[in-house]
Length: 89
Image (cartoon, rainbow, N blue to C red; front, side, top):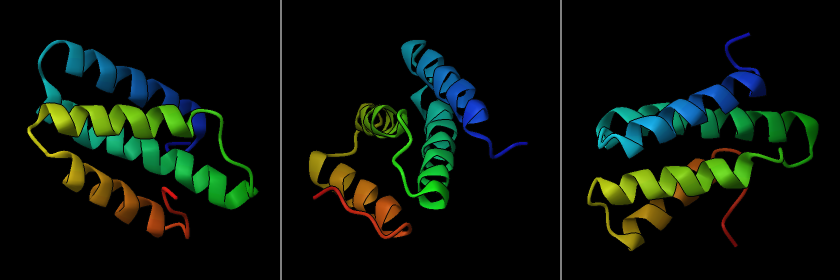
C-alpha cells in the first residue's frame, strides 16, 4: 500500500533525484513523507527501520539546501521524531 516501506524507498530515491537537479523545494515534502513512513514502520514493529537514519539525513540535507539553518533543521527533525516518541538524543 501507499504507506509501505518499499514505497518510502522509492520516494526517498525520487527526493534525492530532485535535490540533485536543484529542485529541493519539490523534494522536501516527498522526503518528509518517506521519513514518516519509516517512522511509522519503526513505531509499529518496535525496531528501527534500516533506512530511517538515511531518510532523516536526506531530509536534513534537503532542508539545508532550502536555506534552513542547522538549529532549525534540528528542531524540525526533533518535532518529527517526537510525534513517534523518539528524539535525536
